[in-house]
Image (cartoon, rainbow, N blue to C red; front, side):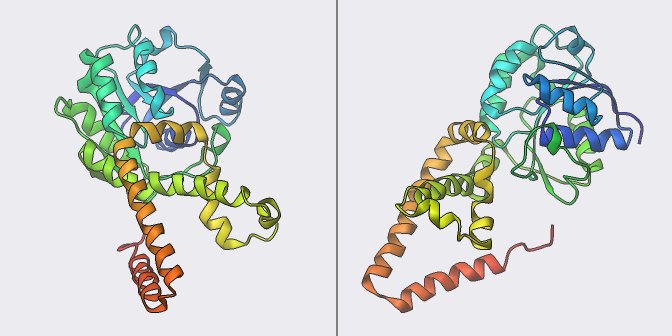
Length: 291
């Protein structure tokens, strides 16, 4: 496969964006990568690791040379960044995001960059870790992981097909969802678990013996609480961007906890066992195919 994009600008040099350009450069699918990030020290680390080849803490004329711009920042920053991009975007440049919510991002790009909206491709790699920054970037992060594309009504087919090719080249399993389907589904399997992990940490540490309890925590605590180590800026933005779906799920989660509380207070061992058993069966059946 030949080079698809000669000049790439990565805005937000961290785990996802950094890992993406590492994979694409290794396969010679992209040329020069210019990184833009507010954190100068992070950019220095990215240059040392050869994640990017040039860097800036501000947007400048180098963006006008880009044929691909990757937005890899928290979803709450998209509108502001899109506004800052307006003076520099050339009309053939493809623009993508890698955020965890889609409808708000698509709406913001359509509103702020209407003349460029057709070349915006909404993407979401279902991959990551609780690490962040340029030092977290790694090869093969997306291999055999799901990648969701959310096409919109004005989608430019050339930009869309090139981005499909790029993500396939990382080893990701590419599929499509509508923006609304994406946000509803991801609220269930990603966003709510993060909120629960954060709230669980508050529930534990807020107890009289909470901090002492952490000294005795084992693998169950480690596995359950791992995602509470995720960057709070990302999840603050996601919580607001996908609030409609999340608020419904929080209500449902509270109902489930109330159900458990009632069964325990009633001493209904048979019903409690059945509740746990059903959940165990659902979990054991996942995943349908290995990832």
